[in-house]
Image 1 (cartoon, helix red, strand yellow):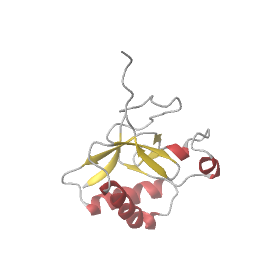
Image 2 (cartoon, rainbow, N blue to C red; image 1 turned 180 degrees about the horizontal axis):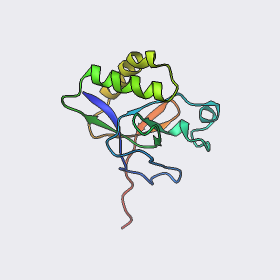
Image 3 (cartoon, rainbow, N blue to C red; image 1 turned 135 degrees about the vertical axis):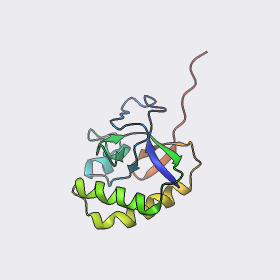
Image 4 (spheres, rainbow, N blue to C red; image 1 turned 135 degrees about the horizontal axis):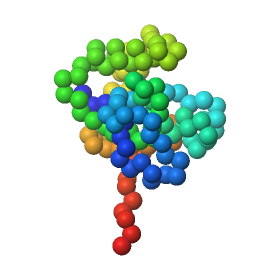
Length: 130
């Protein structure tokens, strides 16, 4: 099963990067607030971040990872629990899980992603000078 997990890979490529998640933590794509929709570079950061299911914190980089043995019911329950703990409607977990699985399916395992509101692109590391 391909899912999004937190990664510190390519952190620092943008001056306003942040990673308050643990590498490997399951992620979801939370809706943006008004400021985040206006500009992904807004102070709140929601327009450029992915949310950690366990920490409830954010990161600007996500890794597409294959998690063998992890099942859809496991994923839906992780989302349900996290959504409820954060004040989101837990009954949305199945819809969110289905959407995130479809999203991850379109990317190669090992791809690092960044978010710019509703635009998601592969994050490439800059080569060092010389």
